[in-house]
Image 1 (spheres, rainbow, N blue to C red):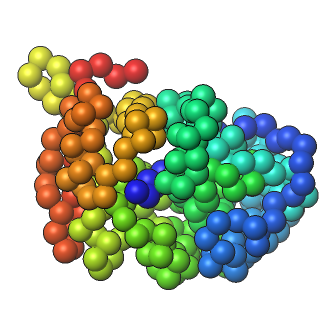
Image 2: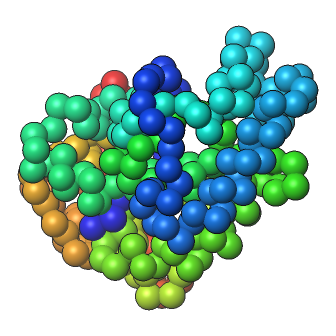
Length: 261
């Protein structure tokens, strides 16, 4: 099972440690593209601060992120699972998993990133600020930039069930194609109240984090979207098949909740 996650806008504070080694990250086929994005981002942030802040979409309170990006080549790197914070990762709770579940997370989870393309939770990276929606000078929109590199790398990693929990901005960087499509499942979170259902926006991240945690803790190894539905139902989630997958469209699953938190 391969679980595709979005990153978090918030990152842990910079810490001590050796700098990132691009050739040591997972998915080595992305190394050349990672080098391009890193060099371009650092160059931007070592130039005019106002320009960099505008390109990165930073509010006045986040201007410090420009200086942090400028120092990325020498900044301390630590596991991506510790770098990413936010609602989804808080509810996933990687730090509180037992050893077996954490090992499963290391194999299954792939976090998409505007800077790194995609990383495993054990990959050592420094905290940064660069969303997939950014348009870097000379590279353009990162979602489109990463599609080329991802096209030849991701299918090799996606050799079983693909559970795609990415937001639309990060989904733009790679779309399953060919035979991968029929074994891919996406998830929508709906809240049911007084007989009516509405799409959950912010709190869908919390539900997705808990859903992935439950699968990891249980040691579930579904190989198809149908087996995934069965596994989630056994774990107490209310799951419905909104649309079965085809050769062109992934499965669409609805997770129905009554409370959002």
